[in-house]
Image (cartoon, rainbow, N blue to C red; front, top):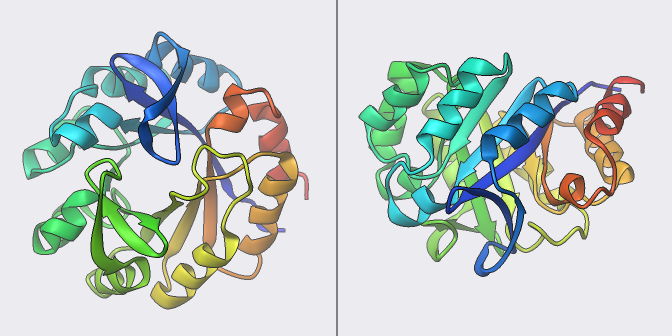
Length: 247
């Protein structure tokens, strides 16, 4: 079985580590008071990557939690990828120049695709990831508060033609629900773009993690983001890491 990367998720809002249910800002659960301490915990448990999302930034269109992100990237010896509130080249440089491994471009990819392409060309396809968050197949923006008229496949094909090598696909209908991942949607995106796809949303069990790893043997699925399942102790990060390396 192909080994995939595990990305424990830290969603930041109001200075705390939270999870939303289906992206609803009114259905929030606070899991920790310090995003950095949560990142430190994941690093101590063996994480090689940490996936961080600035929910306030995504909603307001500007960086809010960048200090937490940069501290994790520079002090913990792990790879950090960050999404949320990234709207300008200066935002991208701010993170990449301060230890962050990858920057996720989401809303901007829909609103200003040419600018997003310029980031890929300037900073490299390994450092700029396109985040596709979809409701019923259509890409959502602004912290999932608005739905565009573009399909995830359509946007993915555009960016793959312009050099994108990695996508994060989040099925909003499953995010934070612990109902299992939408494997088919991820496989279709990988097939349509020829790019690596990181699965996000719905992971509830080690069986789900194994399902993603199994799918990776047949498609270019390269990793899985895990949030609520870890916070609610459905399984541990070390168990998930063993699940994808012992097969």
